[in-house]
Each structure stands twice: as structure tokens, then as C-alpha cells.
Length: 287
Length: 140
Image (cartoon, rainbow over the protein chains, first blue to last red):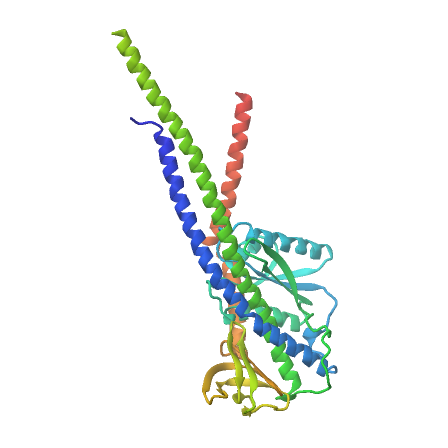
């Protein structure tokens, strides 16, 4: 008896899809834990470096590093951090939409934009737009290293020092919690972290080796790098969280679909059996 | 009781060490420095080399750093370690690499880039088919 063969195959194929999405959900869940740890591990460094910079800026009021001076904005640089892979819900598209609104604002104000991308999704998106793409890096995997992204940062820092760009932003997803990821645009240059809000007691200064200027140069570069790196690992954690949620809802939807199809199949089967019985009964009555 | 100084060794990727030590040796740029508690405030760049700690219970810890920075305050030492050996020319090579990659990928219209375009075309074709279907239904 071949009742509802199509329905049965359909149920089978949806079950297979559900298996895949469930597996991806579990993989994402375990990866998320790791990426979250990595995200937290980067925090002490940037916290400490930020404090030293604050202190240095206060101790050396006469030396103004170019990274600390605001200029008239004629051209800005942005570094867009995205994931390498898809299937993570609206994570990347939300980020790009946020970026686009900023791009439009700058466009209105007649400000040109240079773009560097980290991650292949961002590159795929921005290469189709009419923006000036100056650098990209992708396929960094689940454990990105700082040295992988030094190149794109260097491009932007050089452009800033040469006066080609007057501001630098990094666009990435902020990890609020597992359910929520928020796209953020953060200004890196000129450095704004140096608001002198912290009242350091006593007037003392460091002994500098080799000298204050060189140390500050070194520190500011590292500070920017750590900021971008932090954005990258945070975005990674966001990707896994978003994928986990997306895959969970996909599995749930597949479950609902299977339930509905099963109902249709059962009804068809019952109708076929009823029909067969009534045929037999009718045949027996006729004899 | 011996005096100790709190030491934090951190890199951009992770925290490497946090604890107290009697003495810290670090490869500063102007020569190796040994730091005991109540050292005068000091900031110095570090060369690639070994950081050694002597803890209160006479244990020695060794860490390799590939450059970085050391900040010393009377009761605290912070070492900001680089995660890889960094030099101006290496950084520049990385920058160039990132730029070339972008240009290459922009040139390269085969492979992955085609995939995105194909997807867009597919979506368009589906929309057209739907439109045709609608028109046909209205006509029929």
C-alpha cells in the first residue's frame, strides 16, 4: 500500500535537515563557550594599557601625539569586522546596515571613506559597493591571532599619520548576551579614551626608557591594535551565539513542519484504509 | 616577612601571569633590569627575551616575551607582552599583504565572488518567475 509516498519522503528530508541544524547548534554552543573565554581574556590587557596611556597623557602635557589631536574631518577610515561564514541569523546584515547608515551620513557631509575589512562576509559585501576598499584580511578561523590583523591596522594608522584620513572607526558586534548582539561603531582615532577623568594623586612621573615619546608611540599603536583585536574576538563570540540561536529556531521550525506533515500523512493513510474497507464491504454486500 | 610586589603579565590575547613576586627580571631595551619591591616608577620597552620571577616561596617562573612594555610602580609591575615578534619591516610587509589581498580579491571575479553574484541573479530570476506566474493566472 503506497499511501502518501511524497509526504513520507518529505518528512524524511526534513528530518535530515533537522539533524544537521541540531548538530550545528550544538557545535556553535560549545564553540561559543570557548570564544567567550577568549573574549574575556583580552580585557585585562586593554584595561591596563588604557590606564597607562591616561597616566602618560597627564604626565606629559607638552607632548601631543598625533593620535591624541582631533583634526577637521575630510576623510574617515573604517575597519569592518564580520564573520567568515554565514548561517548566523541577521548578525552580519545588521552590522552592514548600521555601517551603511553611517556611510550615508558621511556621504551627505561630503566626507570620503576608506574601508578595511576583516572577515570574508564584510569583504563580499563591500566589494560590491562603491567604496574605496584599501585592505582586507579573512579566513582567520576560530582562534584569530593579533599578528593576523596587524596588516589592516597598519594601513589605517599609516593613512592617519600621513593625513589621508582624519578619523578611524571600528565596526563590530558587541556581545551583550547570548540572545542579543549589538552592532557598534567605535571611534579609535583620535583616541578618546584619554579624557582625564581619573584624578591621580600625587605628582610623580615615570623614569622612561628610552624616552617618553617613543614609549607613548609604542603604547598608542598597541592600544589601537588591542581595541581592534578585542572587536574581532567579541565578534567571534557573537557569531557563535547568533548561529546557535538561529540553528535552534531552525530545528524547532523543522520539528513543527514534521508534525504538520505527519498529521497529513496519517489522515491520508486513514482515508485510504477506510476506503478499502468500504470497498470490501460493498463488494461482499453485492455478492 | 619578605616584601613582595604584585606582578601582572598580560598579552593582547590572554592573561599570562598574575601574582606576587620578590623580584622580577625583564629584558628592557637598554639592558636587563631587576626589579624589587618599592622600585621607582619606570616605563620601558622590552626586547624579545625571558622574564623571570622569584616568588616568596623561592620558586622561579620563566616566561618568554617577544617584546612589549614594562610598567613599574612601587607595589606593582605590569608587563604588556607582545604576542609575536614585531618589527617595523614585518608590520609593513603585513600591511602590504592585506592590501594586495584586497586588490587580488577585487580582481578575481571567479570562485567565491561569482557565488554571491549568482545568488543575486537567482533571487532576481525567482522574482521574475513569480511575476510571470501571477500574470498568467490573471490572463488565464
